[in-house]
Length: 281
Image 1 (tube, rainbow, N blue to C red):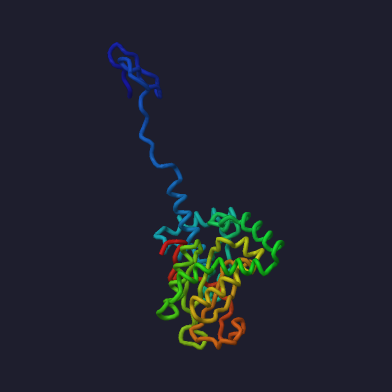
Image 2 (spheres, rainbow, N blue to C red; image 1 turned 135 degrees about the vertical axis):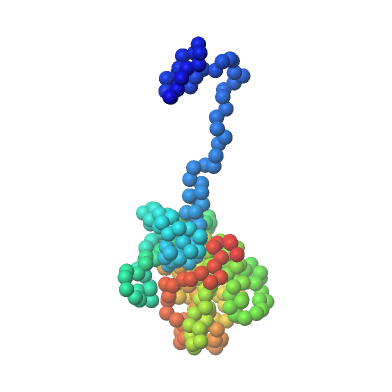
């Protein structure tokens, strides 16, 4: 119960008592704290980036990788699905084994790609359209090859095993803004190889209009790795990830890369081996 000081009336509840003397200025307020929501926004970015690299991925896997609780991860996932940043995909066949309903899996949605670095899409599209109109389609092809010349020079003379060379390529792609990762596939079989995945492409919209960029990138992979590779899926063609199969068995020089007999079919599975989370190595 509040009481008044002698000679001073009690202030109504919720009203401060007057001061006993003049003040030199306004009473300072509390020290400002962190901007509300900053930590939540940071966590959301981590979730989105990890989904871009590893999707399709379950909420449980994300919680384990990021050190978060299941409810916290699901709260972010639900919000991003509602906004179109993420999409829910049907679980892979191997995830359907056992009783109970298989866990949902998440991949980046169209709005999510817009949130990730996209480069100067409009400027690039306009420039390439002008180049094609003024000089013809071959000029675009030449430009695409030149774009990857720096990557070829940076990785020239790679040594080590093929998986080690792929890992070096993954790191170089991450430095250029790709969410890249690699994983072994079909171990111990004739189809053994490495699958290179790019969950985000900074020039995706440009590549949709000019497929010469994707083809130049594939040729660069072959030059850098010293072997033929097979493109299984691309973001530019509407897939949720760019996937490239790198066979451990060297292909015959005249064998078309798309006819390799041991190349696995396109996999939606995209795990976290050698994950880079954008530029994080």
